[in-house]
Image (cartoon, rainbow, N blue to C red; front, side, top):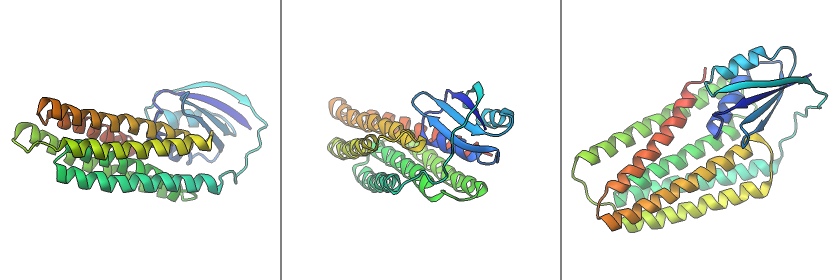
Length: 264
């Protein structure tokens, strides 16, 4: 068996890790994938020539470079996943989905596009975790179908949200309630910190767990951005900071969805 190392510069979130898994699952000579998400590296254990693997990865346009190929005597176990990781992913999935509903509800009532956008980002997280859980053992074609459905759903929501941001920029709207923005975002921040703690406590080196930690770390930054926007709404007596953070988050959600839709 051969071990081929790849550098994948743009592999920095769970959406991309899932895309890579689904793309390479079509190649039956591959026996195992070993991701190092923080270092943006992937080790592929396979038979025969690595050229088809490199070609498939290049098709994702994630800036892939083949580093080396060598022989390996590593034994591959098909039963390495344990119930603890599955339960952990269920926990963070439920937390993200609950806060999607909470932020969406308070975002609508407080007239805050920042909260609405952040709720959709939480929904995008939930979709990623659900894909990792529900697509296990499914055929590659089915996984692609599930991922594309999720991608279309995310991008439609992002487009609608961004259009609403533009409409509010050029129209006259009520000021968002900065108190609600700050308090709800603080709760979401605490939820993401809890998810990050649980993921780090697991100390797993597996790809989906490492990717989940990176994704959750990004969510902490987004939550902090919405809190900062709430403070600026109060200080400037303007709704523009709320609209700006909303637009930024909608772009982030749409970017992740677009990458999913590029999968073939």
